[in-house]
Amino acid sequence: MDLLQQCFHGMSFDLFVIQTLNGIVTGMILALVASGLTLIFGIMDVVNFAHGELFMLGAYMGVLVLATTGSFWLALILATLIVGLIGAALQITTLRPLIGRDPLTTILATFGISLILQNYALWQFGPVARKIQEPYTGHFNLFYLEYPWYRLVIAGLSAAIIGGFWMFLKYGKYGIWIRATTQDRVMAQAMGIPVPWVHTAAFAIGAGMAAASGVLFGPLVGVNHIMGLDWVLKAFIVVVVGGMGNLGGSIAAAILISLLEAYASMLGCISPAQAVIVSFVVLVLTLLFRPTGLFVPTPK
Amino acid sequence: MTPRDHKYYWIGFAVIIAALAIAPLVLPPYWQRFLTEILIWGLLAMSSDILIGYTGMVSFGHSAFFGLGMYGAAAALLMFKPANMWLAFVFGLTGAALVAMFVAYFSTRLRDIYFAITTLIFSQIFYVIIFTWTDVTGGENGLSFSRPQLGIPGVWTTPFTGETMHWFVLAVVAGSYLILRRITQSPFGMVLQSIRENEPRTRAIGYPVERYKIVAVMLSGMFAGLAGVLYAIQNRFAAPDFVHFLLSGEAVIFNVMGGIGTLVGPIVGAGFFLLLREFLGRLFGEQFPYLIPLGFIFIVMIIFLPQGLLGFARRWLNR
Image (cartoon, rainbow over all chains, first blue to last red):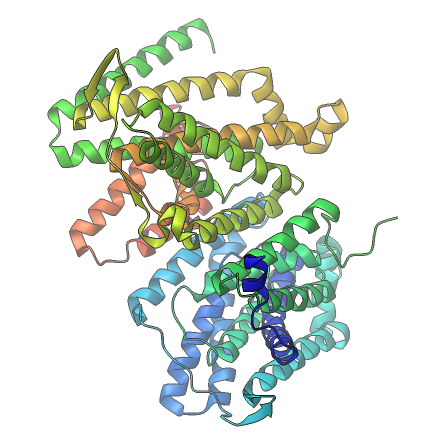
């Protein structure tokens, strides 16, 4: 009984609404990270282990550009472009020679990249967390709390980026190239699509999306060299739960998991560090009952 | 292998074991300890070779098995007075096997990359549990304990010194190698290799592939747990850092550097990695981020030397 009381101590409807908002905000960022991961996986069967490090690198680029120019929006755009270029360079130097090998070698190679990037960040920027100043400091009143507008802006911007990306895939000429390559690499090559460059571009886009989410998320927590690992793990969970290579599923799974974690951290008997275990339970249940992913239609 | 090859193999084996057994008598204490650690990390890497090299599943979760071996040994050494070495092994191996069974049951439902990801996530979950469950595991500080005595309690015991520790570790690692070698050459090992080569066909022949995979993960996890127990006894502590997935990553790096699917290769890889790290540390100071150059070497080896150092040496010898 004591445990139950401790668990539900301080629960209220207000807190529930606030945590729902928080969950949706982190869920949108997570969806942005995960859709880059899904894009890269879908098109070239590469699980990008370094995705969290690209997220981290994006946040650091944001810090640097913000410090020199003072404009958050410029930081967001430049960080996305720079990390996109870095992603392209990484793809050309390490992943392109591995085309046609066992897909497992690519996971090892990207793991190597993540080690290098993470230690480089530690070496270059030190272990102390940096801060990105948020562009809007305004608040609005939500019950007894002042809820920052910026969080809603993040959710909106993430949704806009994902929406724009979806439109690009659906209607853009290069988006159609990407989809064609995902469906059938050999046939796309035969149709005259430069498949190796489509791979590079897809990797760059994924890296850029990770960087953008890093800059957007930077103001909520500090920027440090190990922030990538948490995110890549969560993105992996999202991608397995949502069904690999399935954009809509990833977004739904990202919001589902973030909401569950936000609600779990509301309970008095669970510390925020342990709230991660909730997403793990979701993963285990998914593996048990629907190993192909929660949001994938049952194959007939 | 022809009988002649067999003879050379056993002669080579005996020479290497003899050299490793004599080494602590001639090496200074620092390097003696270093060599013992190479053997322990080699055992960890060798255990994951069963999955990477023979079954074709890359596990990024071996730190969980290693860490549970460590914490199991810690539990046995802290709970029972006087501390009993064999109980540490029983507890550590049981802990590792239970975790391995749990992980295997879920993660073997997925193949290839998904398997790697789920094992990684599982090991991070164990890390979070161990890190936050301060009352039992000591949290961030871990647990420290005194070293037990070597021998059979009540019959004959001797305290662990640097040399006896090394010989004990050497005996365990050599024994594990022989057992694993026997397993990989047994019909069971052949089925594992056939899963690596062509899983649908293995299933079509009628082998229960999932069950084989679960047993392979458990076997691999138990040997990783054994390495954990050895490490705990040598260093007299258990810490959450050893459950962190970075350790699993290092085990994978040892495998790739040494040569996967060879059992000996991972030990060579561990030695290569640790020596290189030591060398870089001495050259540029302790604070040097040694994982940057090692990461580069790792990537270059994946691209240009996929067979690892041992495969390269073999090709070069056969020239």
